[in-house]
Length: 413
Image (cartoon, rainbow, N blue to C red; front, side):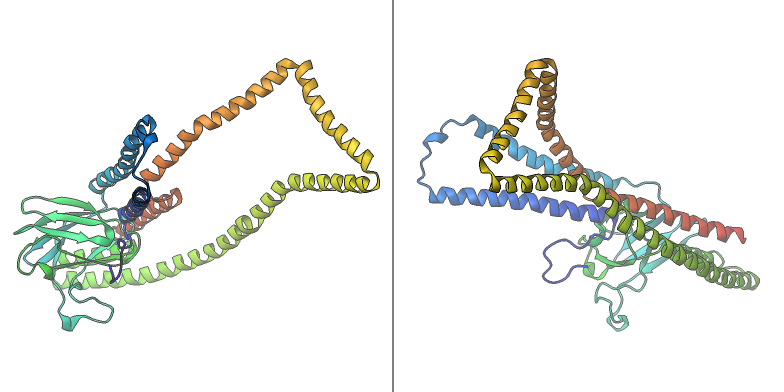
């Protein structure tokens, strides 16, 4: 959440939140550069003599101050348009949460899971019920529980007037309009409790309907949602069904404890061996090998050159005339060999020179394209490839854990 004296945005806790944070820093950098240039220009104008005889006709200046704003607007517009599209584009969700705004509280419904209807209301917590670590006028009695690193969808609507379900740290803000349903993506990066408030003037108690989302791991979320749906579906069943559900619940907990212990031991042992493997491979083997291979030829050349210079310097101290003559003859021989090669083999010399000139020309010609490609790659995403790959892998693992928990639950039925 935000704090007093904070100038920037809140830390991005979702996938799109991180991209929005990167776009903010990127835009601030461009604005600082533009502001610095304009300030410097105004400072120079104020200190000048207000005469510019040589600036009466400058075609290249006209081109520059026409293209520069266009490129700056393009640099700001492309990533903004992409993020706007990604905020509305939602992949196939694993779970859907329906958010309904009322005067003045929120309702959360989980209706597309096992054909049951589990819902609850979320009111702002009283000051007497707020514990240490909670925030006044932001804490609620029932939080909206979601899974981190799992494709989830939020459907936002309203039952009376226009509300707005907003979580600034996750870059989520969707209006709840009566008779209309808006959707947002709920893919948080790590577990935690994230706060927001209604961002539409919805009435006299507008400031007393906060938003509190608790993101948990996929394992905890699957157990929570199955347990609550179980309780909701079997609420009207008989005593026998409730006893059987209680026994099944206890058995599930015992199985979960032993399974978690096995998985934890396996993970710790595997992590230990992987740590030593990657430490020896990437921390010792590859650096030493790269350093030796890359510096062997350079070290050999440096030693040979130093030895030759030391020998020549000793020779120069004992006989400067012969040493100087030998150096001139050696340099002349190098120049003569180049001239001789050009005269005796003009075709080969011309081909070699043409290749070098062509390589230099291609390098100079490709430099703008390389810079433009790097610029476009930077604007397309503000997260590096390793981060995006990690997010994709973690989402796949969370989906696997979620579906495995469902399969284990249904296999016991």
